[in-house]
Amino acid sequence: MSELAFDLQNIFYHYNSEVAALSDVSFSVARGARVAILGANGSGKSTLLRILDGLYFPERGQINVLGAPLTEEQLQDEEFAFRFRQRVALVFQNPDVQLFNPTVFDEIAFGPLQMRWPKAQIRERVEETLALFEITHLKNRSPHRLSGGEKKRVALASVLILDPEVLLMDEPTAALDPKSQSMVIDFLAGWAGSGKTIVTTTHDLSTVGEIADHCLIFQNGQLMAQGAPATILGDNGLLERTNLIHVHRHAHDGQGIHSHPHQHIGHAHPH
Amino acid sequence: MLQSTSEAPLVHPKSKRKRRQGFIERTVRSLADVLEQALFAEEVAKADGLLQSIDPRVKVVGLLLLVVATASAHSLSIILALFALALALALLSHVPIRRLATRVWIGVLFFTGSIALPAIFITPGVALVHVPLLHWPITAQGIKAALYLLTRVETATTLSVLLVLCTPWNQVLKALRVLRVPVVFVVILGMTYRYIFVLLQTAADMFESRQSRLVGRLDGQEQRRLAAASVGVLLGKSLQLSSDIYLAMLARGYRGEVYTLDDFKAQPRDWLALGGFVIVALFAFWFGR
Ligand SMILES: Nc1ncnc2c1ncn2[C@@H]1O[C@H](COP(=O)(O)OP(=O)(O)OP(=O)(O)O)[C@@H](O)[C@H]1O
Ligand SMILES: [Mg+2]
Image (cartoon, rainbow over all chains, first blue to last red; front, side, top):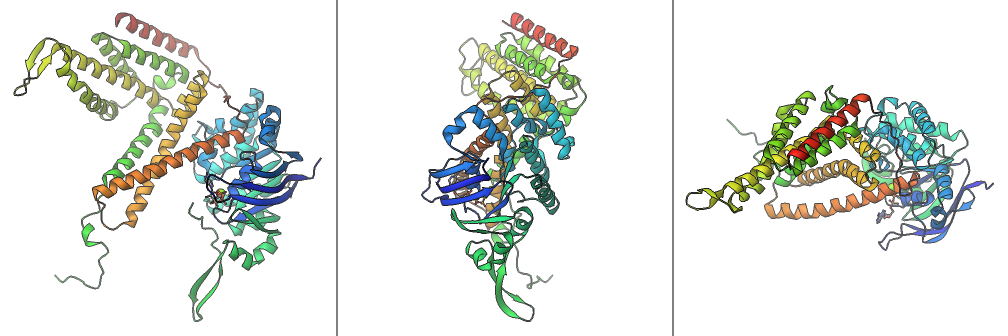
């Protein structure tokens, strides 16, 4: 069994525009690792996660997931696809995309139903999952009428019911209030303990230390640097160059105008 | 009284009158509100009435049968009888009649009326009277045609509104899925319901954010240009949204066919209700020929 969850070599991807969303990206993620992908808006984070989840396919380059090459042809095969979709889960950045079923119950049952689990087993698992995420009281509600924090829970529950080995989360804490943020972070911490692989994207540096042991920094579709959170977060020059922090000129009492690096923690960037 | 000069005017002189909302902004906002009301107001759906207690599948099939019967009826008394039945169902299901009247009947009257009105004059037949000055003939056949159109549409609309008002929308969708209505159709219907709202909200927000960046008001031409540009943005957004949803479905194992849980359980009273709907519809089909 391969020790790597993901292994990417020289991945290129671009949308219909000329600008490359990802260019010449190579890295690997060990099984059981917690990795954060950092980058400013438009640096290619969401695109990368979709490639890791087999939703987009690179134009050039090779990607291996859990020891096997991942290609469009491979995913045509139903057995391979079901196994892959069960093992690798993605929570989308936009909850309006993630939640498309009439009720919360149906939302959580969607994955297992598509994989043709026995219906009695599905009902049982959905109830367990609802209880686990403390959303049993929401089960007959329409997912889109929930609050941001409730939507996040439902989104998580809807993919984790499949008990995946790898969880990909796009901006898990964006647009959440502090209480919901810490709920998500606590959850990720607990879930990782069980030997699962987690890849998250974020531009919120304040949460990185809690959700990752390894960081990848992206800018304009390129991997600029990687390393332990402490090292990366201590490198102001790097963070400034990749637009993760910026320099403000302003006055402090009695010191005149000066400038120092500044990060805007907790402010969701307009999207 | 002295005018204080130390306070700079906060309002641009041109917009000193209370800022009025533009036509488009107002329309989009009120459309969003009405839709939200219509689709999401679930207090009627949760009330304890006759239609609310019937299995959603039976409601979908039964009311649909009555709509078809209404549309194909060629007898005014049968159409009126079906309308009376719809009214009775509304009363028994605690649907506020005033709301039906203001939201549905008057709206349909104006909309269908404007289509039906010309029929009064242009349908050939025996002239009853002539419009003074214009000398247009009003024919008996014309009045009949207009009356049929109006009563049919009012009845059919009332029946469909009853279904939507007395059933949580997600149950309607689920019933359609369970009834083997092609998945694509149900998904599109569901998305329309879901995303019309998101998109209208986006549109309203877009107008508001533009408005807040503007001083004074836009003239008509600028409003139209703004609207055209915004429609483009919205269209792009909705396309993006639907292709992203498709990816989200793929990510959870969707392979072209949706599987659903059928957790409706028909009680004896549901079979009874279904029987009732079928008998009434057959009766209307037969005598309304
Ligand atoms: N559907 C699309 N069509 C065309 N270009 C796109 C599309 N989605 C993304 N892009 C472009 O690809 C690049 C990378 O986008 P991506 O969404 O991966 O960035 P991101 O790092 O996730 O940004 P954010 O922090 O805003 O979520 C950007 O330049 C973006 O404009
Ligand atoms: Mg993104």
